[in-house]
Image 1: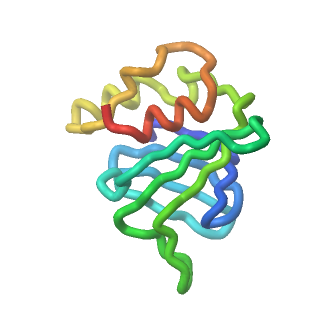
Image 2: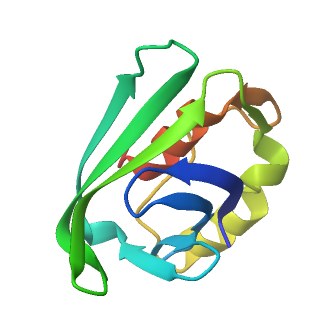
Length: 131
């Protein structure tokens, strides 16, 4: 596992989910559902300020929508508090990325500081975008 973030509020599909970053894609793990989003299916990423100023919304545009019953979600909105900070050394371990790079992973964590507390929305957005 390349990174792990707990209890991220997602607007659609609704609920709190854990984000787990793997070499093959992003996994959203909720209480009753688990979704795997391949890196190639993420087409757009937006970071939007919420009106209250206390949260940011990361929106993922997918080429292949997530299915939950009859519902299809082509946009996924993640609300992350601007005050939330994560330690990049524990949430995104460098050793796991080095091992995945040796196996051909195309993504990078080079734009993150090695051992530092950073805003959670910045870390998640940095891991999602291609460098």
